[in-house]
Every structure is written in structure tokens, then in C-alpha cells.
Length: 178
Image (cartoon, rainbow, N blue to C red; front, top):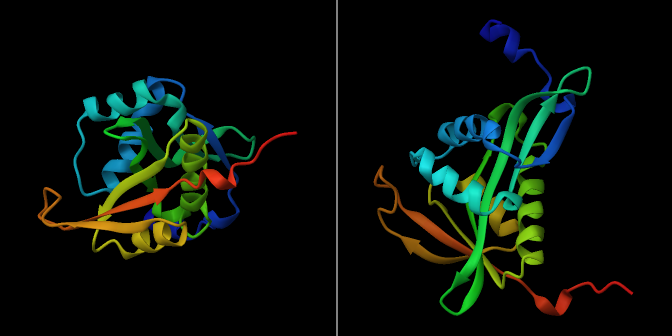
């Protein structure tokens, strides 16, 4: 397929499916997406640390072909949840969406699903870091209720600054089934 062919594809109508991480066969797709989008090079051991310890907090998105078979991994969120100091804290380690599929709400949905799962796991708050220059990500997280907690100078290997963002889970709004 030539570059001209990929430019003529209408990605907005391609069906997608959200899938919980199941096994190591999904790791190459996650690695490929994250390494294209994020500025930090992660070792295979970093991925495995998150995926093996918190598989239910990793969600992947696939495009579907004409027969509704999974075609290509186009998005992922990788999170963790553990006790840290004085609270049970959730953490969004990685979020990536293939650039051809952006502006479809996939990133928003992945974050919402991650927050919901970390909430159900009992997290009191959720944190993450994102590059100061990544205005799209900053705006997305702020729109979803995260606040800038701290600026981290020269946080990334490329020398870039970051913001630590935090979302507090409001236990007063928990839904109870009758």
C-alpha cells in the first residue's frame, strides 16, 4: 500500500473493539503504539511489570476488518493500582492512540475505562505525568477532571519538562445498587 492509499482511507468509519489485556501476544502491539507516541523508551521489563501485575488495568483497542475480526491494535492504556504511603493510588503509565484514529474519542474512552477500573479497585486518587509541550494530552486530562499538581523540570530523558496530574476519586458519588 502506498502513502497515497493510506491518506485516502476514512478511519472515522472503521469499527473498533475495546479488549482487556489477556496475554503476552498483545505486548508487541502495545510496545509499537507506545514507542511511536511517547518520548520515553521503555524496556520490555517495564511493560511486563505493569501488564503482569495489573492485567485488568490494561485495555487495548483494535480496528476491525469487514468480517469483524481484529485487524490492528490502534490504542492502549496501561495502568496500575497499589498502596503508596498513605493511600491506595492509581497510576496511568501509558496512553497511546494511533494518529489516524484520533479525534474519535478513543483516548477519552480509554481514560474513562481506566479510571472506572481503578475506582473499582479502591483507588483514592489517580496520578500520571505528561510532557509540558503535549497540549493535547494536557487538555484531555484536565477536561476529564485531572489537575496539575506539580511541574517536573527536565523530567524526561530528552530534557523535556513534565506535569504531574492528579484526579481525586470522590467517594461521596459512589453508586450503590439496590
